[in-house]
Image (cartoon, rainbow, N blue to C red; front, side, top):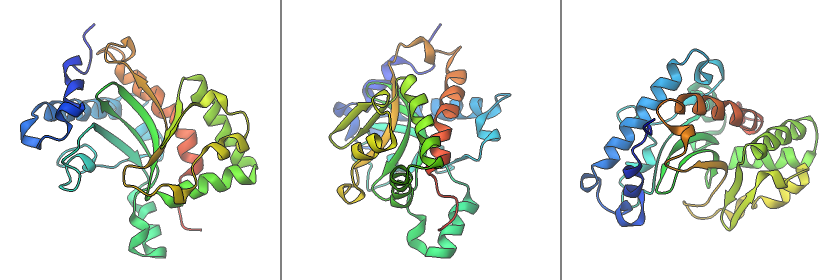
Length: 241
C-alpha cells in the first residue's frame, strides 16, 4: 500500500532545505496540500474527534497549516509543517475580555505533521503558552483529582510509546509513575526563554510505517487525537481564573 506522504517529501524539511525561501522549495506546497487533505478526511470520518470533542482547528485559512511556517519572521527556517487544534474562538475571547490583548498569546495545542525524519503527533506548550503550562504544573503539584486524570492520560500515552520532549529533555512517558515524578521533570516556565523553546508529549512514525499508509492514516490520526485529548482537556484553561 502506498504511503499517504511520499517518502521523498521528508528531506525537504531537513537542514539542507529548511532555510531556503518559500518559492525555492515547491515540495512544501505538496506537504501542505496533503496535510489539508488529511484534515478533511479526519473531519469527515464517521466518528471524527474533531466533531465530537471541544477541539478546534488553528491555522491560517488560506493555507490550512500552522502560520509559523509562513510568517516572515520564521520563513527562514521551515523544519516542520503541521496542522494544529486547540480552544474555541469563544474560549479565547473570554481570556481577551478578562485579561486584555496579552491573553491571546498561544496556548496548548494538539498537532500533527511532518519533520525531516517523521510523521508526528504531539501536544505542545511553547514559550508563550504560560497560562496552560502553569496550570499543568499547578495540577501536578496539588496532586488531586485533576492530577489523577492527567496522569491517567500520561500513562496511556506512555503505553502508546509517546515521549516527553523539550530543551535538554527526551524521556519515555512510561517512566513517570506519580504526579511529582512528572512535575520534577518539567522545566520551570522561566526556563523557557527562547521562541524555539517548547515542551511536549509526542510520538514519531517513520516515513515507511504501515500505520501511516493510504489505508490506515485516517484511523491512526483519529486514534491519536483521542489519545491526546484527555491530557489536553485537563490542562487547557477554558476561562480565566
